[in-house]
Amino acid sequence: MTPAGSPEVLEIVQVSDTHLSRSHAWFTANWPVFLDEMRAGPPDLIVNSGDLSFNGPANPDDLAFARAAHDALPVRWLGIAGNHDVGEAPAAARLNQPVNDARLSAWRQHVGPSWWCEDLDRGKARLRLIGLDSALMGSDHIDEAAQEAFLDAALAARDGRPVLLFLHLPPFLDDPDDPRITTHCLMPEPRARLLHRCLSGGVAAIAAGHIHRHTVADWHGIPVVTAPATAFVNVPATPPPSMLPLRTGYLRWRYDGETLSHQVIRPRLFLSTDASNWTEAARTTTTLPPRPLAAPLF
Image (cartoon, rainbow, N blue to C red; front, side, top):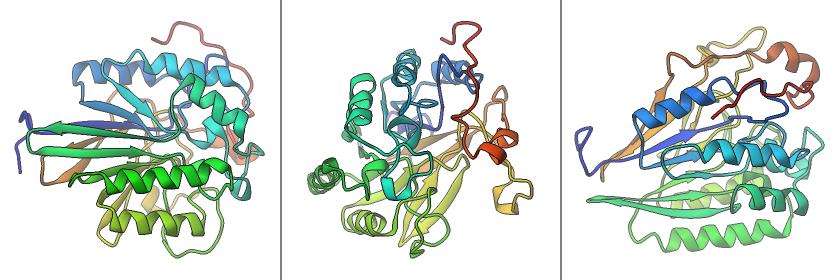
């Protein structure tokens, strides 16, 4: 393995579930700390794996604010949409915010494309990153088929590069064959289509977010990793041992041309705000009352 600090090592930071808003700034405390972290140790690229905003489907200004906050980062960044950015596939909607043309348009106006492909090359370390919008998967929106065609083309043209695939919802939680529809992961049919493409298309790892905790699963040799949230945690009244410790953080991915690995980073100044007192009753943070920023965030 190429040693750390080598000029042939690629580093990608995955931040997730930042939930930024200027009008409902409940979860902004860790963002200035993250900015300092990136300035002290800048990676090659930063990817936000969804829920950049607090409530983008109802308030596009949350998307605009999240974009401005990310533009303060010291290196290039890319984002993929989460359910708090563009809504959810209608059959798996919990917040009554189905993905639609207006919400997709707001994302593209304020943040960027719904899906993208990015190649990073450094010596022998050649890696393809692909970002997808999980809200489209199983949505029957016209863009669902377009995104699948894009993925097929991006995998076919990777020129030997392994692929690190980003999406907001993890493909599955504990059981990849679970037939139930849940808001915590992809629905069974689009999950099966995606995983089949990954297995045949050179995907080295799947990187997701959404569940606000770090997990690692394996699907036929492909690691399926979820990042901890940067904004907050939700601690159940009786958490299972697998959920502890439940803290905020981010991931730092490394690829040296042979091995793709990741490390959980939990900065000392990150606060692990527990929102469960609210969400146990409301089932969502989006009903929190306004809390405007008291001071500039970046």
